Amino acid sequence: MSTPTSNATSGPTSAPNGRPRGPAEWLRRAHGPVNGVVTLHRRQLYILPTRGGMAFAVLLLAMLMTSLNYNISLGFALTFLLIGIVMACMWTAYRNLLDLEVSAGAVSPAFVGDAAVFALHVDNRDDTARIGMEARVQADKRPRIPGRPATRRPGGAASAASASTVPTEAASLTLDAQASGALALRLPATRRGRLTLPRVTLESRFPFGLFRVWSYADLPLATLVYPAPEAAAPPMPLLARADDAEDGALSIASDDGIDQLRRYRAGDPLHRIAWKHSARTGRWMSRTGQATRDPACWLDWHALPDGLDTEARLSRLCAWVLAAGDDLDIGLRLPAVEIPPGHGAAHRRACLEALALWPERPTS
Image 1: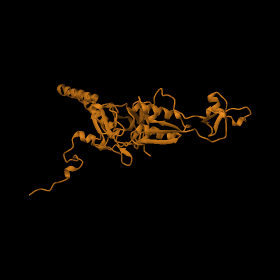
Image 2 (image 1 turned 90 degrees about the horizontal axis):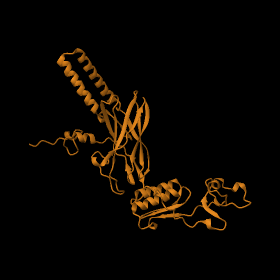
Image 3 (image 1 turned 45 degrees about the vertical axis):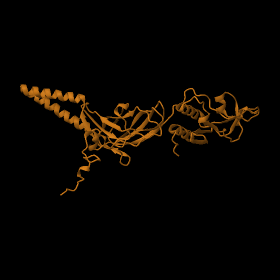
Image 4 (image 1 turned 135 degrees about the vertical axis):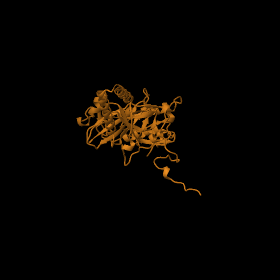
C-alpha cells in the first residue's frame, strides 16, 4: 500500500525542487523589502569569527591547556575571564545589526566612466547606538549590452560569476539611538544602459574585530548610464541663424526673459538693454520685444560621418545634447527613435535617456 506524499519537506528547510537546502542556498535566499523596507531580523543575520578571532581562540586554547598542565589557578581565572569577554563581544557584534531597517533612497544617473551613486536609508529604532556599520556590493566587471536581459540567480537578483565581480569601496555609518542615516554606494559605470543595484552586504566587526556579522538586502534600485560625451566634439550643426541679417538680430534668448536679442542701436532706451548677455558676450545687446524662440536644431544619427562606430556616434550626440543647454531647441533622430524638438532640463533628460537605452525605445 502506497503512502501519500507529504509536503512537510517543501517548507523553509527544503529547496523548491524538494531536496534539502545547502548552506550556500541559505545564503542566497531572497532578502527583499517588505513595504519598501528590509528589516534585519535575527534569522537574516550571520556571524562568524574573523581571522583575528580565530587567532584569539587558539591563544585561549593554549592558555587553557597550560593552566591545566601546570594547575595554575590565576591562569584559569584569566582564561575564563577572556572567554567571557569574547562571548560578550559576540553578542554585542550581533546586536549591532539586529533589527536595523534599510530602505531605498535617491539614485543619480551617471555617464560612462563615472560612478553611479545609490543612497540607502538606515533607521535605528532602538535605544542603543549602532557603531561601525559598513555596506558594500559586488560590481560586475562584464558590461551588459543594452537590450539584452541580465542573468538572474535563484535569489531573484542579477548575478555574475565570482570571477567577473569586484568588490566596491565600502560605505560606513554610525548611528545614535533613535536616529537615521544614509549610506552612499558608488558603482562604477562601465557601459551605458540600465545599471541595477546588486545585492547589498551589510556587515559589522564592532567592537574588537573578533567577529564578523553580516546580512543582505535586495533593493529594487536602478539608474541609467549615459554615453560618455565626446571630449573634443565638433560644433553642433546649427541651422541658419538670423545673425546674418542686416540688423544683426541674434537667435539666442536672453537669460532674464524670452525676448529676442539684437545688436544695440543708438537711441535704444536703457531698460531694453540685455545687461547680462552684454556682459557675457562683450558687446551691447538690446531686446526687440519679440517672443520668438531659437530655430530647431536636429541632431541626426545619419548625418554623422560614416567612419564613426556606434558608441562614438552616441558619444558625439551626447556631447551636443549637453552643449545645447536649456535655451536652444533641439531634436534627436536615432534609428527607429525620434524625439521632436524641445528645450529645457526635461527634454535634455529625455534625449540622454534615449541615447543610453538605444536600441531600446525610451520610456514615455
